[in-house]
Length: 168
Image (cartoon, rainbow, N blue to C red; front, side, top):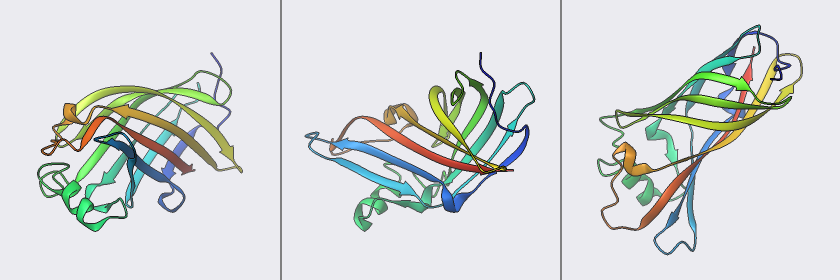
């Protein structure tokens, strides 16, 4: 097992230089609906042995797919239900190095009050002396989190794209 060449300590997400995006194919699979969450908070801790843990909190109301009517629907009770469940959270219980610039993230994603365990690979890169950038993509089944699809317009999995910059 490789060790992360990142200084141990506490890290905070830089929301201005981080992106949590999503994409999901439409009914015919001809195009993907894409968007971002404009408000994200996070933290992390790197231990001396190179393992890490952390968490992200996403403001559901900050969803932006560049289409006002669609965004209103995505915030509705049929979908993310921003009024009842204003936050999406991910608790990274363990981040384990798998190479000199890769790691496996294990944790729990909570959407609409439903939590599921997830595991996915990330790459990371040190930036300067006090920052690290993690990049990865997570594929989920929205139905497992209670997201409805009343008109059947969205099919298959959704992909959550992560580009996260943490500073010490």
